[in-house]
Length: 431
Ligand code: SDX
Image (tube, rainbow, N blue to C red):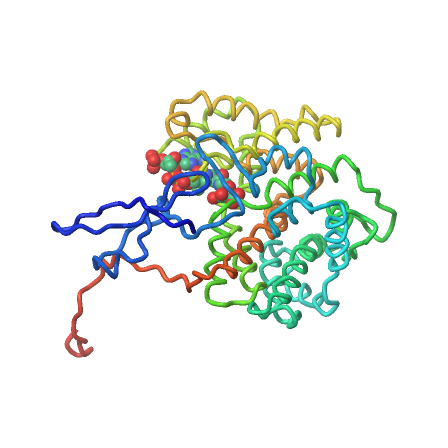
């Protein structure tokens, strides 16, 4: 971190405390409060971390007001149109765009780690067939620490690298197996002659009874969806991975924790909830009823796929996703898909409504993704597993960055205690 000269002065009961201010490459300055409790005997208070920077990072930058998202400095719209997911994985992991030779070696390495230990197939058999695929993924990814003992030592750089490649390579296989198990079809093994996105589609939709040809349009759309979900700064699931890792937990346990956090409908579960909401709305004439409910303080209903803690302008990923939805559905000959029509009209109405305008609520990454995934043939229960698959590289990149940080300490927040003051135990006879 660059040396700082700026300071903030905090005065408490007439006593002044100087707090260093650090300036970033981009974004707001930060006030360094690490020594505050030791100097002033007070905590800061920020439930939900709306004004708190938990770490420094060089991986991803978001400007919520401009609707800007950069991965290692490269804008997401350029990566989505000019790059592809495994190249973005290399960029996030190592900090630069690879040479052709480096990219080929990386892609070969990932390709040759896509199979999972054969014994892990038995894990799936312990789940109910109607278990949500996210429940299966949390369980199986956590169980990887019971199989890959040669890549659990976080203090060994080589083992960290092996664990990183294994997780990126095996997540599509695990997600596809969770899907196949859920629908009662046999597992389909990964194939080394297919690219990453095509391999995932093949493992999901191929059956032993006949050849399955991956549609290149869907493969390109799938790859773009992976890229759009790859990383997103210190969101809830990434912060979960960082906090889990700060205790020294192994990488598979940390990523399983991230998957569990992502599952929530306020986070990665929103893509499933959004498509279910669009289907419940059903027709354009019912949109005003749902807009009214979203604005009603007494109604817990929220417009899924709308709003964001950071973006107070369009989520740049939603823009690319919307273009991709138009392109994919047109190429599939279903451009008049009723759900897409409802989504577009809902977006138009919401963005003209004073409630959404003043609260700066825009469509986020989850608003259009479900429409594309539905058109590809995925059930809504597979939407968040696909998000988790794509976000694994972001979690891993942030995990590696934190482990390399000399300032690394176990994360241990404090609290504002509002409970009972100290009191003596009362024997039951006297209560
Ligand atoms: C992801 O953090 C990330 O980067 C996450 C993510 C990533 O890539 O990792 O981008 C992925 O999680 C995207 C978000 C997906 N979630 C949804 O689409 C669920 C619906 N959205 C909301 O639940 C909400 O917008 C959040 C959770 C996304 C953000 O919540 P905040 O930042 O805590 O904001 P808030 O709840 O305080 O809302 C501010 C105001 C509130 O009204 P007031 O109390 O000020 O009167 O806006 C209202 C909210 O009621 N509001 C909404 C709304 N979202 C916020 N009202 C109606 N519909 C909504 N969707």
